[in-house]
Image 1 (cartoon, rainbow, N blue to C red):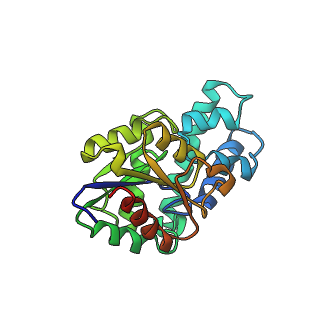
Image 2: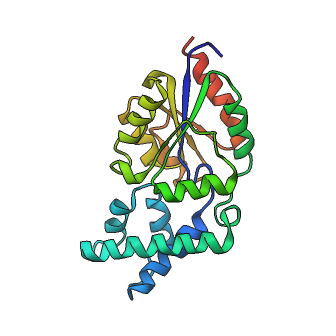
Length: 227
């Protein structure tokens, strides 16, 4: 490592945690509560990462804006109920190797960690608390305060808060929305192959990795290219 300050920004769902079971079941509950047919699992997972106000009209284009607002609230309520019943560790488990990787990166004096997620602030706060991740992320960007991915606002704010420029920042995520957001912000990116979009959809990524234990090597190699 050089003495240049680096920023590594993580997506959450599909990157750090595997929340697909809860996402699908809570989306089904929201639709069923309005007497609507359950959306296809692949359609739901293909849109994970978008903010709910953008996701819901894509998932249910035949419904009205008022219906979409009702679905969003029903989904949020179902998700929080599910998490309260099952607990964060069970409902949104960390992927294997994620916690160790986060702690190793956090221990590097020249590395700052951040989050950019389509989750709400309430949802992210509960997840961080449930997994004991307090203090790891110097910047936390959520859907409440930004346009949906792939708009680069989350990453622009993350870099401003961390005091790091785009040349020294890297986005890590599992969807095309993450990769396109990074490109729009002028950042490099690493696509992870264990999430909700297939590798074929991650072509905008600077690099791809298959396991968490490959991530630090990929980061080190990308940083060494800057020397």
